[in-house]
Image 1 (cartoon, rainbow, N blue to C red):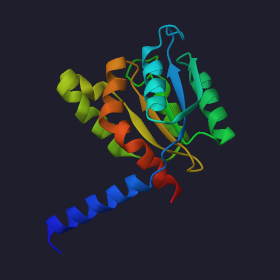
Image 2 (tube, rainbow, N blue to C red):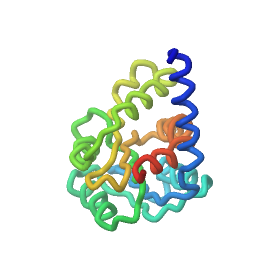
Image 3 (cartoon, rainbow, N blue to C red):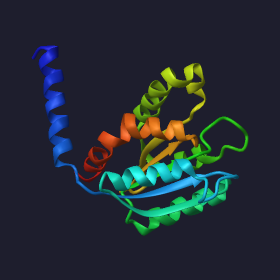
Length: 180
């Protein structure tokens, strides 16, 4: 089979999976910040609004301090409940000492999706240049393989980039892949 035929077959299979994906998923949004409140959490509010506008159901939303124990408690609570198919976090993905999100998320992942972080940084590069490497955006399947878990930077621009460039068209497909 020629290389072009292989790519055409892969694209066709991907489209079939997208069509078979659930129209509605359940999601949680966790904002990690020492300064944000519900009144000024533009990144968390954006994710919630986009999820709902896409027909999905946001079953959890909270803001926690950038503290490993607080982050872990919120995530483990949602994972233990077993009702969220996706958890999106925003904040704490940089390289500063106070950024605790990534180590906590990585400890909760059973299957990592390295392509997520790579793609996010690729999409960010035209906007922020080489500073895109400062993001440790990460994602994958949480322990138990029933919930997708993604860590996004805290800036509204970064969250918009991730939604428009990745999640808007692929989130339901990703959920489909976890249940087949």
